[in-house]
Amino acid sequence: MNDDQQELREIADHEQWLAGVLPPARSQSTEHLKLRVRIELGEQWLRNQWSPTLGETAPHPLQEALRHVLPQSPHRAVLQSVPGPRKSLGRAWVAGLGLAAMLFISIVILRTGETETSNRPDDFTALDEAADTEDFDDELDDAWAELEELLASRDESEWEDVLEGL
Amino acid sequence: MIERACQFDPEAFDLLVDEYAPRVRGFLRSIVRTSDVDDMVQELFLRVVRMIGSYQHVGRFDAWIFQIARNLAHDHLRETARQPLDSQALMDSRLRSEESPTAQPMENAETAVQVEAALQRLPDAEREVILLRHFGRLTFEEIATLMNTPLGTALARSHRGLSKLRNWVEKPA
Image (tube, rainbow over all chains, first blue to last red; front, top):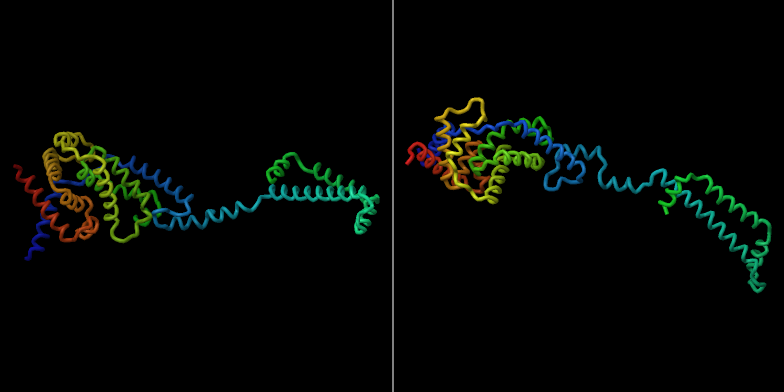
């Protein structure tokens, strides 16, 4: 028997002696430990749900499975960029109000053009003449009516959406 | 069981606790000699939960979990100075122990205390190899890898340590 084999044999003999005099320790109770482990398991599961990556740990099947059913951070950002129905309604109303205001202002500007001197270029003559017509008065009244209608048709709560959109 | 534990199965972890808690506790108690062993055992299993995802199924799970235990013990030793072993206090705690329904007879308890006291006289590396074999049930190859030493060094440490240990216990000065 060579030295290595002799050494291994002696080690085995010593270990057998040690096993007889030093038995493995017994935990007094594992119930508390098991409970604490279960709590940590739950917390770890939550951390894995909200974290896009595992950090120092490697991906594992559970997390990969969760990624397929839970919103991911990049997708979540895309979803958040799409406005909801209330925001869309508010934005449409703001756009309509803006158009009505622009129409009103345009008409007012055209109307005030009639007070300018006769030295204005001929190109504006037709506009001046048109400004004197009753059609422009009607259009002005229509614009006011449209604006008032828009204002009256909205609930007070939707003002908040408008202001938020602004 | 390991596969299920990697998927955070609570029942699999219950089985892991049943299997490894006694062995880890024995290893840690012999290494760090502290009354906070139960806290360290708990900390070990919490680390297992947090790191189970990094277990690559390369090598045995025993080697992996005892690597964590070894790191935990070294962290504790770095933070605290090793206290001299109080053999009488240890004997008292064993006599009062309700750890197992089949408590050891007084004679065996005294021998166990002597062995534990003798373990503390060994160099750290020799003691560690012996405990990883006894409680961890690791192979010498696994121990060599874990301790980052050649296989022959691990064998030599085990042989020297066990020889001295047995000599001190069976032939006290």
